[in-house]
Length: 165
Image (tube, rainbow, N blue to C red; front, side, top):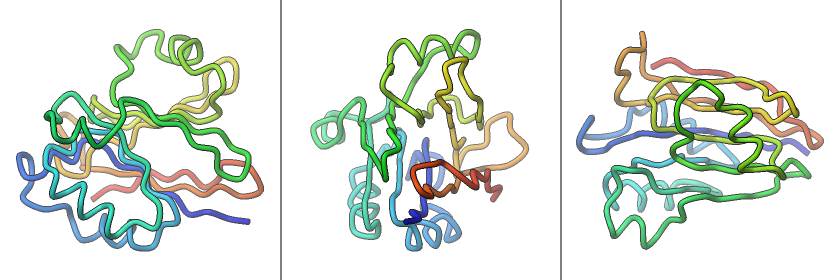
């Protein structure tokens, strides 16, 4: 069994961009599971993700108002082919992130997060993989806007790619 994943965060539509880039929508349309790690900003974007995603896992971020917070949890957990994922928008400062997140999410193999707009791909001492896809609409101090793709194959995370827009 193989599942195609798309990971996005910090879309900030329509504040940072009027719409999500077509390349991101193409990836969403082709994915089996889409993770969105918060800062949607508009309910309309959540609606569109819900319509276009085969399966959507989402959380709210610090820029998401009351209506989005009513529809989305602060954290989410899902098991895909035996691989345990968790997601949260904000994990705090970069220093000590791996140890802090392992303590907060002890039963997690892969933690997806956002907030910083800075892509992140590390492995914590206990083996948890931490992934931040950056932002497809607001690169901040990064050279490009980004999102991630990956696959779950036979219970393993494979082919993690940072995609530049």
